[in-house]
Image 1 (cartoon, rainbow over the protein chains, first blue to last red):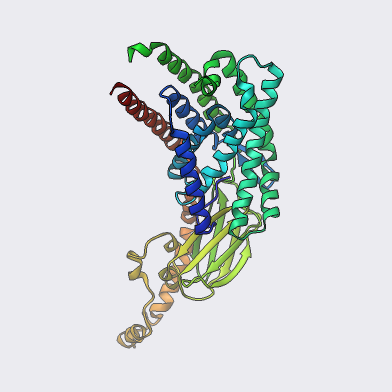
Image 2: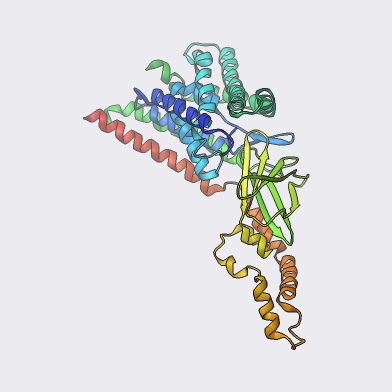
Length: 204
Length: 222
């Protein structure tokens, strides 16, 4: 999911960086002190999750976990994912500093969209089935949308959109299911032991 | 700070739980047979008149059937090809300029390896990986020097082999002896992130949380 340096045109890189800057600005605006530890921990989880590989045929892909980050953090997923990706680029050489903006946008925007689609299920009082299916949907759809966005980034640089996007989505199909299940498991676990985390965004 | 005791305990409890989660993830990391597609690397070395390249994903999986493009110093495409099942691709040196070898793996992944012109002149297998500083001494002697040597040693049958021939013999045996080292070098270049990087990254994030909390707290007090 990390786009390497030297593939995208400068216009796409700058555009991605500008949109990411806007997203981060929205994310840290009116940031409550209480949310900082949650952001840090989800950022750490995102940072580490990239190292968990899912073998999928000729290529193998890795977990992304942006669905969980987005579901809990909403717009604050932008700064959390930016920090995670910056450290991945610096320490693991995944992606790169020039593609940081585009990569953050590709992973954080689907996370925010999932927050608005599925976030309501995190409110107290929703049934177990609704929570499980919403969390699964968030994990699944965030990876799906990220794949499409990577395909779109390549398209803007001049590659054909459909083959690129199809390849991304097809390769990430196993990841989508695993992320869906993992997100559902995490949400259920958090709801049981720390329901405050899930409600954080809705309370404030 | 003490006023907010209740929410601090929330934060610490949360830390505790998610640390479990992170440890489970770390444990998952070390499950065997991992290969990944978030980074590709290409490593190239010169052996005689051939350039060998080896391409891998960061987990060590070979990059199969991926296009490899070779450019000269002015970004003119010289030749292209595809990696085989072992991620290898080799080609004869097309011309003696510095080469830029680009691997284009699927899904927006790309890696570049540059071979300086000296490495192609010296036909040293290791030179591809290094800067051109010490290699200058390894440059093949120019024609005029060669003649000079011949003139100096003319008559002596023991050195009649000539500098060029001796060099070729040494090169051949060096190639043979350095082959395992080249392989080790190739493997070390393809190695993925280790525990140091992972722990370092988590430490960075926790440090950033601390800094953010510090400033948030100061703002609140003032």
